Amino acid sequence: MAQANTYNPADYERPSVTVDVVIFTILDSELKTLLIRRKHWPFEGCWAFPGGFIGMTESLEDAAYRELYEETGVERESIYLEQLYTFGDPGRDPRTRVITVAYFALVGADKLRSPRPGDDAADVGWFSVYHPPQLAFDHNQILQYAITRLRYKLEYSAVGFQLLPETFTLRELQEAYEIVLGEKLDKGNFRSKLRKANVVEPTRHYRETGGRPARLYQFKADAVAEVKARRLFP
Image 1 (tube, rainbow, N blue to C red):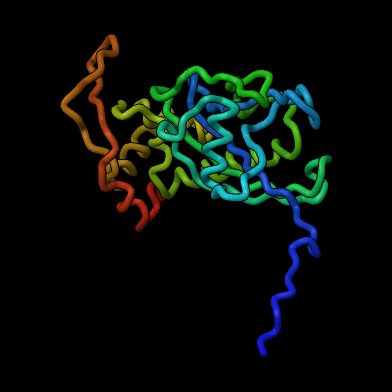
Image 2: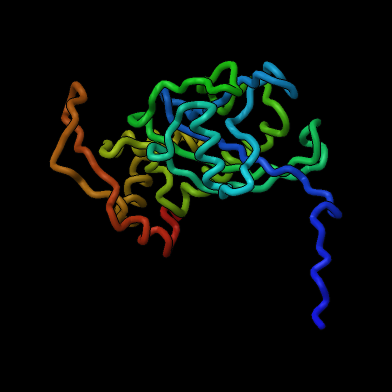
């Protein structure tokens, strides 16, 4: 006779699980992240990343999209979203044992809408990643981890193009990389590597710059497959 199932979930401690979303954009020639001011304890009045507890019937990714929309009004169709890391220090949340799955998201300035605070947020705004306000929980650690991941991904993937409009000049592309990496890049070397990577193509359009019109480029449709095989900027 088969042994009866004696498993009882109540016999085991169950930590709570949350999601937090680090969303980046480039505004005013600076890498910025979207923060919400917490309305309730703990860390009432402090700034934090959009996030919250996941529902029992939703996926982690769906929870990330939901929390981002509920707390800031940012819609899933406008962003690139990727799981970042799981943070689980036992003392990271004074309420109870909480494990958070962090995501990082990217949005181009051309897709930005004015964010609006949701029910759980007193305010919402964009802040420089280099001069953020005091952050709640372990969100400063999460921010630094997300910046490192973003910089690393610029080297081997086309993720940086998510921060740009659909068409752009080569100068704008280089400036975006410089802003994220926090360093100046040699123009000739950058463009040489860009040609070898074969991930952008010229359009028929130009942008007036006050001098010689600048050719507009776009991200190649097959570039995602291209960059999976090798580093974008070795």
